[in-house]
Length: 287
Image (cartoon, rainbow, N blue to C red):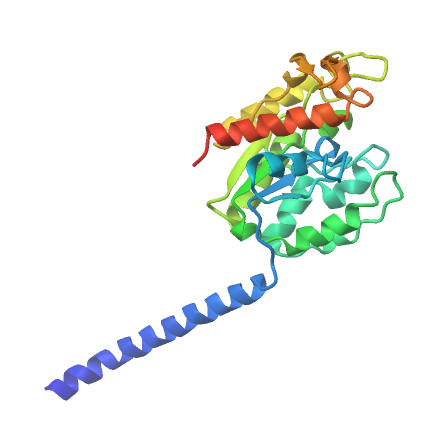
């Protein structure tokens, strides 16, 4: 009787062994794929608001100094949240490095698209190094993502869309897809959305008065905040940051346009203010 009972469970034992082997093989495969990948505490995905400086005065470097965390800056100037279907506008040749393309590359574990970007645009000499850093990043072992894409979607007149969009050619649709890609790679990753700062033309005209085809900048900021709420993401609102007055060690008052180099890109005081706002938020929401 015992032999007959034992014979009955042999198939189940065999199936269990096969299942264990499959699980072990899958684990080895995943670990092999992540071999050589680099861990970071915070990765910043953004545009030139983050990437304008790449030295110790960059937003990422100042944030690392203020928090004691490892911060990896994977920002690329001129890039958008969405893909851009137009060939003659600012971001079209940089669809290779849109946030949609970057997030999809992590999801597919295939960086051939960003790797193949070719541009002669100024201030892009750091692109190749950052693309290599992107390929080596272990997003599955990254704690926090900070995303600030918004400003160039505004510049390019990308349609804002609606929160239900899934089209990578609208701001909201790309935003939704990006979040899904990142969460698929790392379900526990903390995604913090960072608003842009105010922007002016060289002549001092506010971006709230200029529409490049998709709306004024504040309309994109409202859409960005709404998408963060809809998708359950954290949000740091620095859109009014430059309204505050900063007193330099020399006694000079910095406010408004004076935080920028030419109305858009933050100078040192602007970058210091941005990094301080992020660091303060992280401190207040420490978990």
